[in-house]
Image 1 (cartoon, rainbow, N blue to C red):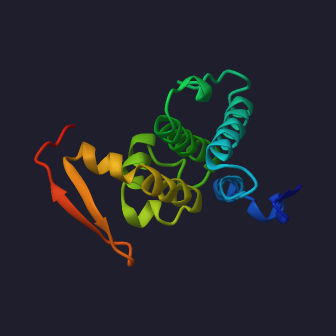
Image 2 (image 1 turned 90 degrees about the horizontal axis):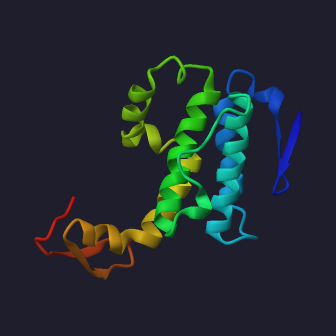
Length: 162
């Protein structure tokens, strides 16, 4: 089957045994569609993954949270990241699925692993761009200045909260 998104085509026959890679590419296309704001792209990606999970489970899948019931954008982003990881694990059928799910999640915490996933990197880039001040404040650090090379000057506030 030929799948076309944003004028880019994917032939599902090219992904035999690599369904997880097809999911990654499709989600990456959805997340990078500049015709919509990023939160709309996230919602569409989430709904797409829910449809996949419903298909896999024969309509016995209930996501733990409803995207539209979450109050803030950061929670919505976290929900989509977690749903993506679960969906990718479920569709993989290859080496990923041979791992225990907990082991798969532990491996994903390694930069060498998650940095190879274009969809996860797109969501992480957005998270850093939009929520870095908030994240650093939760760590008890204040961003004093941002340099042109992407570096930041930080001030330790000594107020780390977990």
